Image 1 (tube, helix red, strand yellow):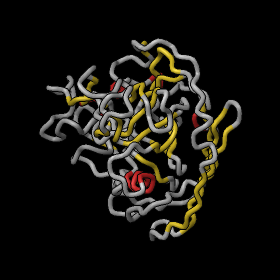
Image 2 (cartoon, rainbow, N blue to C red; image 1 turned 120 degrees about the horizontal axis):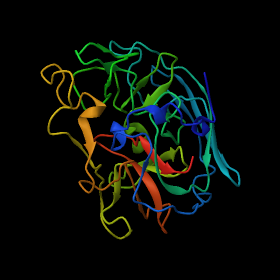
Image 3 (cartoon, rainbow, N blue to C red; image 1 turned 45 degrees about the vertical axis):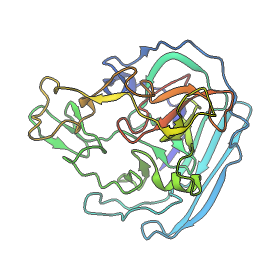
Length: 313
């Protein structure tokens, strides 16, 4: 399988989707943020490269990932193998084996934030890529119809099944919030714990830049400054602004069958209830960008990974 220029595909399928994971019912909405000129990221991790033999029985091969930058693009070539310990695959809940992939993707080296929110959920619309070449993929192909009949692989119902944060369905995710697609692609549905541990080098409360979003802005895991604009403020666990709805939507399968949180549509964006915006991002300073930049977060709660971007694609 080849994932070529993954982040430059035209966003057509996603624009036709319900934006329940991005704070509304329309496919492309205006944000309150004004358009910002491109901020170069060329000084950060342009030469990041990793080649590590992964002795996990489910991998037992060398994981490789190499990033480079031109005047306009940040690009990666990788073999799609994780560079940290993984769970057992195949497993009872995930019958697929990890296999090497041909990863080739590019994002803007000088991303531009806009006043448009663009969904990034679906097979051809991933929200970003981890430094180790593993794709971020928050959604699933699983769905249920109104009666509660479900298919975890190719569901055609209206209710999108969540991979994390629920106990109604089992997708076989490991301790990295990851599992394997039928074609062998290992991918993250949430915080890549093994990668974070590797990048933090034993420092638990620190900001870890774990990858790059489809629009070229950086993605961090879990921790950020208490005051977004102040690098001297304490490090804290950053929280999303999504909450479970107080009552289920009309025609939803019964909560006695599937408690709230089983479906993407069970969540809503509540502005100001957390630290982050609709796309799990905010503008502020980071260790790599002391002058400030818009950046995304992988969080411990829904949406886990951003499901939309605010930068120009």
